[in-house]
Image (cartoon, rainbow, N blue to C red; front, side, top):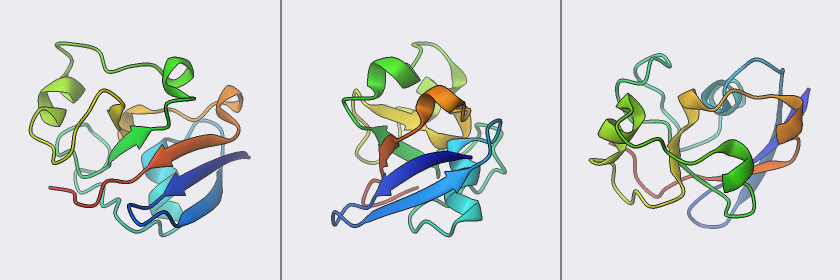
Length: 108
């Protein structure tokens, strides 16, 4: 199991465990993390699993790829910034042990 911490917009931290091979979206949904809806089922079609990668982790997780479907969706996401990613596009691997993800105040 890999530990991932979700930080809500009010600063509340929630550490969860997820099996390697799942996604950060699944980590949030399986553990009832508020603010992550994942309405499209994890197929990169809705942006309701938008998160901000903690700056200390952005180079490990990887930045948003320009021109990718994920980038197209995030251009319309409330509060998107240089650390934005869709949680459904972040596969959990052991090198992400301790990953910190920030949940925006709103999802659309």
